[in-house]
Length: 249
Image 1 (spheres, rainbow, N blue to C red):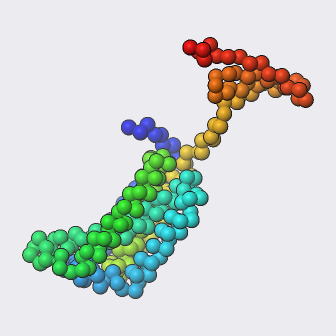
Image 2 (image 1 turned 90 degrees about the vertical axis):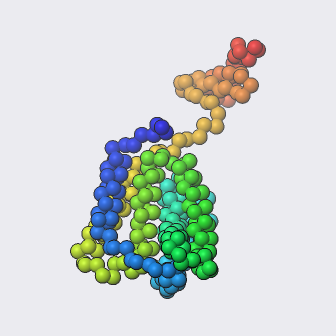
Image 3 (image 1 turned 90 degrees about the horizontal axis):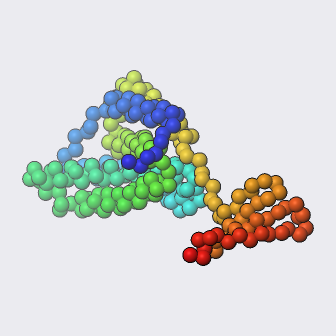
């Protein structure tokens, strides 16, 4: 549809991201059972997750205010980094909202708790920021490269946020944790390979000046005139004006 091509190294990067993500998913811990929104609120307000939230917001602000205006058009990690960091907070908020809806449908109204509405406001804010910078990344860089890098970073930050908030990894064996670390390193390797295959910058063309030889050059003006310059005598250059025929039509 978009007619964008992916190089061979880009395909290798995609394969590494898929393999690494598969390893992480296969060795991921079982999901913790949550019985109320208040329980999620207690998990979200524990010091470890508050520190992660503050770090994520600070990182996003640095990327948005400092890095994006300077490097956003040349470095693919800037826009995708914003989406991934904010996206991890989006997932945690959406999970709380999903549990609230589930419990409400089962007969326990969760709308009466203010925590439910706080999670909803956080989710809406994060989704708006996330979609805005994701669209900017897709408009600026090749979609075939943006998608796997975004998937890899978004998944990694989401797993990290979930591990801090729910402490799912506290009961896991050392082999499972080692396998997940290997998967994470594989994902990072694939991301690095994809980032190295991004499209080169296209130079901006400010005018239609094309040198034909060391002695003769042409210059096309906006009014349709074609100027020919002879560089044989640099002190007194001569010009020959040729008007395009369609200029008089």
